[in-house]
View 1 (cartoon, protein in one colour):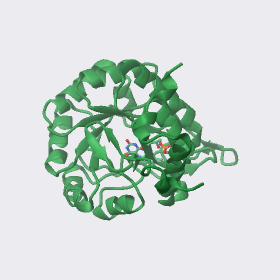
View 2 (tube, helix red, strand yellow):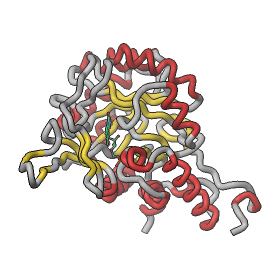
View 3 (tube, helix red, strand yellow):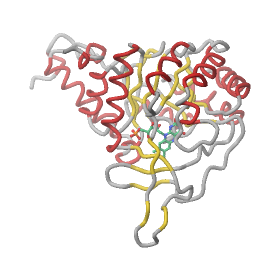
Length: 311
Ligand SMILES: Cc1cc2nc3c(=O)[nH]c(=O)nc-3n(C[C@H](O)[C@H](O)[C@H](O)COP(=O)(O)O)c2cc1C
């Protein structure tokens, strides 16, 4: 290999997604990091194109009992329980994080309609570049996937928030029988983009204690095991709607990331692999994708978006 620089310029890893311009198409997924400027700066330094903050709720939440995380080899089962300091404190932290030099995306979950609107306004006021609505947490009573699998409720929440914010709203959805309808409802409600998918309802039982492992008993599965589920979700939703999509779920290697782009995602988020491999995962993926683009003679990651839809 002669290296990309000797050809006519290096392949481009930048992307536009949901009204955001990202220098690089990879970001952390919500929940694996917090809200701080240090974490946002670390993502940038590692090559990430955006910092996605952990989900906040209108009021502080302590989260569920321990253990909250259990690695199962092919993925991670977790039930953190949306532990967070509440939107007021999180907004203070996020205001500082916006100085890190990459777009900061806040993530919000609530149950009551007026709370969604009020909390989203506080996050926008803190200067974030976009607000991701977590409509898919697998274990958040009254919100989460219960809400996100009801298209009418999705449209109501998204439109109430999107109509009051200036910054883009991104709806994060999970797998359910009604994903396509929910995705269309979110877009009808004014979402500029979608994040697909969240962790998938799951649990783990210890064969010797003969009891569920997680403090909360039930949780969500993330990591390698869900990658093909997520690819299908992105492929189907992009094929049906053409929406701007962040692909999330089981991205460990550059091939996983390319698969999401080919399915129709314009950017990729990384959760479990960041926990298991550390920040180096961003560079590994970016270097691998850059080499792939060069070998394939493709100028930009944006030229890969949705190519697998063609037959
Ligand atoms: C420990 C942990 C905490 C998470 N917390 C959140 C969260 O607060 N909000 C959210 O939208 N998703 C949360 N997720 C889901 C991830 O953002 C992501 O959608 C999911 O893990 C699939 O991606 P992955 O396979 O790369 O981990 C969490 C995942 C893990 C493993």
